[in-house]
Image (cartoon, rainbow, N blue to C red; front, side):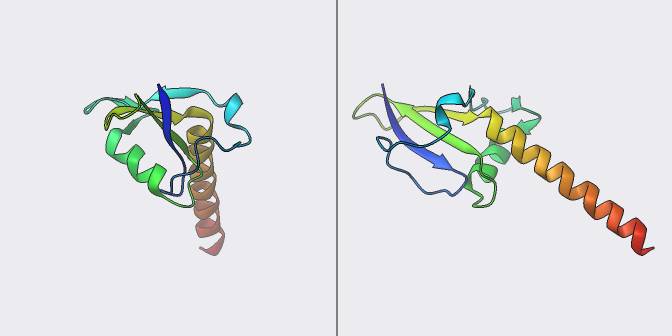
Length: 101
């Protein structure tokens, strides 16, 4: 098996042999099958989040050399940090609305 590509919330592929700080401590989870969920998010939602430049969610594809297919893994810590940022932003927006009213 080899790492086909690493995505860090940019939709861009990084050099898999390059040293990427912080990935050694990441906890990885396989992208859920269609109809299943990971942290309450569907497969399609996870692909959208990973493709969002601002999300910072880490994703890696692992496949056999020469293979077009592989396994997509999502970094749980980066996904949970993204969810926490979303929650903080929504709470701050609601508080600002209440103060303005």
